Amino acid sequence: MRRIAWWLAAAGFPFVAWAQTPRVVIDESFVRLDPSVWVPATNGPLQSGAPTSTSIQRLGDRSVLMLESELAGPMRLGYLWTPTFRVRSTLVEFGVMPLSLDESPAEAILMFPFGDVYMAMALHATPDQGPVWVRVEVAGWAGIFPTAQPWTTNRWYTYVMDVGQRRVRLAVSDDSGTRVWAMDFPWELCEYAPEWTVGVLQGTARSERARALAAFDRVRVTQRCGADIDGDGALTALDFTRFLQEYALNDCSADMTDDAHVDIRDAITFSSAFAAGCP
Image (tube, rainbow, N blue to C red):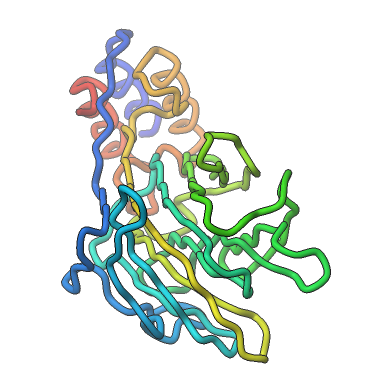
């Protein structure tokens, strides 16, 4: 049956390069905090609700979400975006300005809506070395990694989660566009739920009280094409070849329907997306 399905899939795929238009699913510039889509963070690990103080302010030419939290850890305070989206191939970007260095003044999180699988990245201050760390958490595992240069307050940074079918790249750049830190992590999407959401949070792991203050100026989520298997931004013969290989191996990357199974429906879905050019 698989040989027949594979042949049917191959027969329908033209070897033509198609242009791809990314689709922006979230572009939040925080002119206001919409309570219908941003809700207090209470559905994930250590999430205890809204920050102590929330306001929309002007910083220079930007409208920003200003968060201030009084923390006694371990805890997180902040907001989650309620609509969900697929992350088969997605770029998630957060604009943040840390205004204090107590623990994690600005944390970005990508999570399964029920909170048991998530990835978080944050500025992390330490008493002995100061603000030179990035904390990354993946489904309960936590790691702390040194950055290439010290963090500073009152400066804009961009947190990026570049999610592909095989890995996610986490990166931080400063307001000059200089890459501060980046690291790749393995990421098998079919092992997790297909629907995800994002959040802006502040947190501490220490038991003593800490204060977190930061501004967020933008949260943007851009979905790439699921048929762009190699993630190069275009549909080519290589995507076709890669899909056939993964389909033949029953690999999770060929699960185009996100139902935890690889079958003829995935071949049909891929064929349709490939032929349509994935608008």
